[in-house]
Image (tube, rainbow, N blue to C red; front, side, top):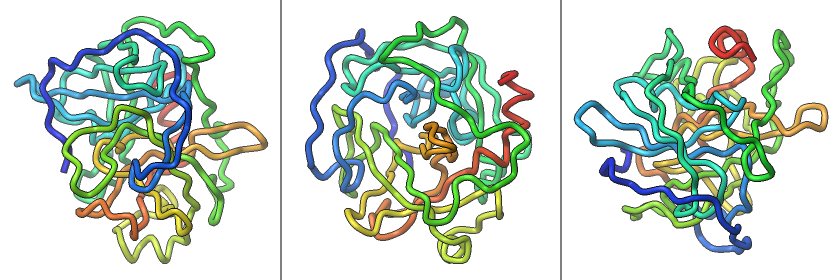
Length: 256
């Protein structure tokens, strides 16, 4: 389930960043330094009730996120520029596009793009991240490859409010066979990842956030958080939409 919040959430301007520590967050994650490409998304329905999730800046005008954060919603308040929630800067958009073949039942093609009405000011705190190369097909991210995911999602099973600081988890991609034990994924357009050391995991409020891994030494968004178990526990892998499989569609929407 997603956390219900009122539309009257207030964002503040950019500020100093918090120092990392080891506390039980995101689900056994840690406080993250500011991630310039990270976006917090408050997405609201026509009746003004909303939910929150994550996204990734891929240009000064485009935020990559999950289709589940787009379908059925009419407004997107995008917070950027800080790892401290109250110091996020915000841009409001009324334009977003989900993948035309998105299936809400099994989360196939769970990918979408929010288009901002104005360009973000690119700086050390706000910057786009790379996408997988267009027309490539090697299968990024590979099995056992490590990736990082950040978000303002819930930090334990009983949480009812989001954390004050951006949280970070590190996971490794598991085999498709193991992934299919938990979710009805479509190969190769979805994959799963987990953390068997710290047992960190994404939770409600993190869906739509980017799985960041390295392609030829460059930090790249290779997945989008899409699937979690109902209990949001830390002993099960999370499911992701593979960005590479939808690269041509992203290009058709954004020109990137």
